[in-house]
Length: 184
Image 1 (cartoon, rainbow, N blue to C red):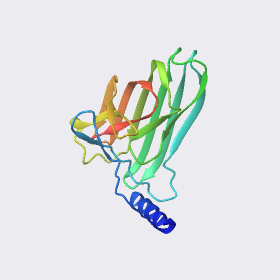
Image 2 (image 1 turned 180 degrees about the horizontal axis):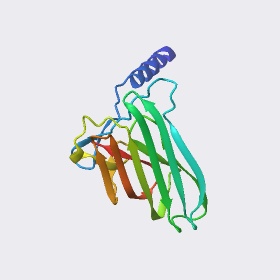
Image 3 (image 1 turned 30 degrees about the horizontal axis):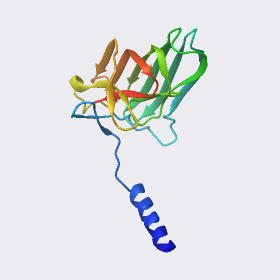
Image 4 (image 1 turned 30 degrees about the vertical axis):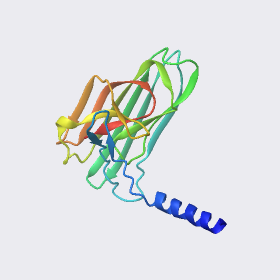
């Protein structure tokens, strides 16, 4: 009996580990689906494509967090810029806030997971992207939930320059930290 249970357990682990789960296509709030935009591949395997910045910010005073990253890719140089503005009164106490881009998708992750009393503002710009398969009219800047759902984000400006490989958003209003990025 123990062998049967162990064999079933191993089979379950095998099938779960080998499943073809692809998180690049995720359902939106509507019936349609969106597809995350991928970052260009690095020029070689030794190139660092993960960028993170962290800073302690007091919520009652507010502050600013800046992320700058750069790497050579197979299609040219990729630049990643993100700015987070925390207004005074956004939360109580001091917290270490982080912005990161893990190099796989045109998105940023913001930590720690938390809700804000007043929205924080996020601006992101990424240059050197391959947008040859992108329709500029369908580009969106979204919140990506862990369950695969998405939510629209309010912002001042969406920048889409397919010819020069640039995507950006200015002053996206965030009420919580999570993963935010561009989808087509």
